[in-house]
Every structure is written in C-alpha cells, then in structure tokens.
Image 1: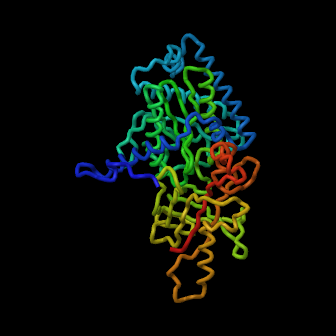
Image 2 (image 1 turned 180 degrees about the horizontal axis):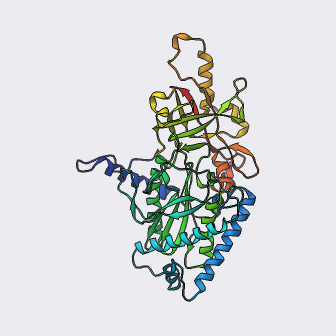
Image 3 (image 1 turned 90 degrees about the horizontal axis):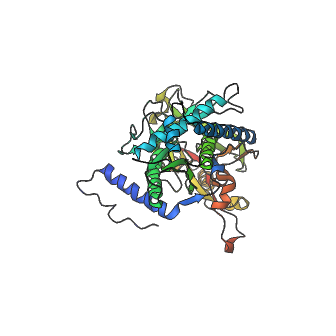
Length: 453
C-alpha cells in the first residue's frame, strides 16, 4: 500500500471539499507518473490500429494520402487554405510565443486531417471499408467542462464526430457544450518540450481521465495527447498501464506522418480500439445504458459465447473514479426493456450488476482459481437453496461471467482481458522476469455479475 501524501488528508477550514479533492487527485497523478509512466513506448500505435485487416489496410492507404497532401500543401509558397497560419508557423520553424498559440495550430492540424478523412469516405459504404468518424476539436479552446465539480479548463477538448449512422459509437449525453461524457480525449499543451513539462502534461491528463471514467460507464481505457512545444505524444491510460509514445514533431515530416496515422486509425477503427466497451451501450430513446451479461450453463458452469442477457440501467451506485485498479462499477438494473427514462429508475430495478477488472489465473488453472467470485456466489446459492429461513438474507446470482467481445482480428469472440485488449504489446509491457520465465503472464479480465436487489 502506498503511503499517504503529507498534507492531503487534512482539509483546512478555508479549503472546500472540491478543492481538497482536486489537490488529492493531482498528488496521486504525480505519483502515478513517477512510478508507472512508460515514456517513449514503441508500438503504441498498434493499439489504435483497426483490428480488422482489410480496414487497417484501407486506413493506412488513406493516412499515406493525407500525409502526402499535407506535405504538398506545405511546399507551396502561399497557402490559400483556411488553416494557412498552421503552415506559415511550420515554415517559420514553429516558434512559440505563448502556450495558447499552440491550441489553434494543433486544432488546424486535426481539422486538415478530418476534412481529408471525410473526402475519403465519399462513394464508400461506411460500415465496410469507409471511415466511421472524424477526430476533431471542440470549437473553443481552454474551455471549462459543463457539469463538472472541478474547475478545470481543458486546453483542447477532442470528440468523435460520426460521418454516418454506420458508427456504432453513441455517447451520452447529447450536448452542445463540452462534457466528460462525450469526450474522446484531451490535448494538454505546454510551451516547452522539457522532460518536466512532459511529466506535468501527463499529470494533468490523468486528472482529466479520472473524470472521463466517472462519466463514461462504457470506457475500458482512455487516450490522451500531450503537445509540448512542437512535440506531440499520444498516451494510453488503462487499469494496469500508462504508456506514452515517442515524440512526433510537427516540424518534421516523419512526425507529422505518424500523427496523421494515429488520427486516421481512430477514424476507421472499431469502438473497442477507441477504448469503449461494445457490450455496454447508451440508448438515446429511453436514456439509459444497455449492458450485456454472460449467461453460465446451470449444469456445468461453462460459458457460451452466444448466450448473454440484456439489462438496463440509469442508476450507477459506484463509479470507477480511479485510474488504476479494478475499475469497479455497480449498477441498479432491470431486465425489462425500457420505453421511457422512468423505466430504469431505482424503484423499477430488481438487480444489482457489478462490473470490474479482476486478476485471473492462467486459462489452464481457471477452474481452480479461488479468486473467482462467480464460483463463490454460485456455491452460496446452491448450498442455501431450499433453506427458506435464510431466503432474502444473502445474494443470489442470476447471471454472470467473463465478458466476451469480438475483437475483429480473426480470433473470433474472446474473453475481454487486458491481454486481448492490448494485443501484441501486452507481452512487451508485462514480460515475465527471467527468473519466472516458465510462468504465464497474468492478466485482468472483465468479470460482471448480477444479484437480485
């Protein structure tokens, strides 16, 4: 257990609760960066790439075209494009006067890529090989987030904008103002590219991402972007990893091309590559969340990839407000398909859903894993079945198991683990020590279950 940070647990009379909470978040974020950040991680872009091979090939082709278009425009002595200030800035050597000057230049870069992504979608079926969305900045910079208890101002608020109804990503809530519920990522800018400033940018990103986890109940991991001087880094924050790519300089052709590839990959990729859980969806009609829960066989306890039960909720009792750990979320839910928002309120809910990441044993020892809460809940139910004198005094499991999703990488439906989520880079992050080379890597698995309320 990490020692408490001096001075954080004491709230003085002049400190409000929100101020003390913000101070604690920042201290924790600083510890995270010092202890966990993997800077200049090679291969992070693989996590953003579409899992489907054909879709990835198409995205790479579009990214190469956009990169070529950008370089051709930059080579012109005079640019008539609306983002000509960006090109003039790069031609002049990217001199930086004030930090806020960076906001418009990076926004213009993203806008250039988004416009070309839209053009690449013309004449294509979006749900097959076309881009599903564009990655764009909110119209204003240095903005406060609507509905947040913290008085943070985000340098550049970035969101996904659907090109067509073929994009299955629907975020809550619909709003014209920036809200954590609709945020894809944030760009945190610093004037210089010193190591201290890079760390400070990551610290601030962590504070924002905690808010995203609270607001987005279907978020598995989050992306972040640092803009320090002319150097851009893409970051990934999960329940057990914190990675930052090597820098991509806007003043260098190679850096611009790699950043364009990230933006295009995100435009084409599946929703789970963006960091969203496809088994938890927002339904805009009844304004609630739909959650798929695995159903176990009552005879042998085996999982079936084809069997899931649907539950609906608008009541979150426990939110995942930490960056690392189990990311436990607890919901009140109903199994009756709702028609109106009132149908998922607490007085209509009969079930409790617990959704969390838990550490699991290797697959060969799965049946003997004593950490499996599902097994314990089933055992409690079976042992006490028929004992009417204790009925209603203990939780009774109805459904539950490891979440399974189709990662579209040719492997079919698989357990939603950090190993399957991170793919090939998992072994790089969690490579076993030489003295333990015979042991398999442990991973975390999504493990929701449900009991009657």
